Length: 381
Image (cartoon, rainbow, N blue to C red):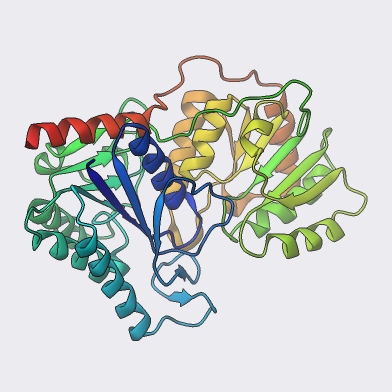
């Protein structure tokens, strides 16, 4: 069977890894052999059954600037650790040569890890039969800060890549909305639709989350302000609220939040495996606007309020939230304008909005990715 290796490093939340694992499961279902080389912090809430996962010495970003990296002990990464990661990537690709190499986000992002990705690209180029090489990107990217970075991205694409998988619906979020797409790049684009796992089966009698306001802030630790504000907003609104907290310190943070929430109609608990099922029966949702959160909401049809992450000049989530507000009527509060009162007001309005039942985008992106790879491999011979 054809082997597909995905190289991915999530540095803040876990969305990049989640998307790569969903693709890997679809590849396995289509008869391909997926391998995921992961360089971010281990995330225990993901199902890894049937997936060949190679864990690099993990790193994470110290905040949202993505320029200062920390190791698993929260120390600045050393040159030795980064070299160990590079060596393991090269060793993995040589020991298990792929037929397809996919670099997640690079070369459009993750420039702080360029040495790792360029090592991977050089390693497969030296194989007896070099693989097909593709970049895998989400719907909306952080725009290049200058023309030089945009030009460098296009040069890397021209030198190393056979195509770019855009995990978006072009009618909802074309790449041009966030990246300068030249004719050379446009020829390489293959839109797959959004990457989303199948909606969970909702069992009769399962009422967890029914009628509640569900609040999430992704799988990282950047949502504390949203959680604190949600506690005060719950005192002003009409429904019971439930905070679902991700990250390695979730249990500790939940204890702190529950202490702060005494007397409020609210409970905080670690992120649950049945979160997506809860979205199908809750009254409304509140969250940031990462890729996976947006897809979860659209799939379930839940009305809600986005508070997009915008620290350190980040624009990706704001662009996505504005697009979804215009197209589907979601509430939107800028992070710097968030207060308990306007969050309670927006949630009360969301509760009365109908669920989204039609004109949904294409969620078949993982299966379409598998079909695209098979077609390209067949054409390659």
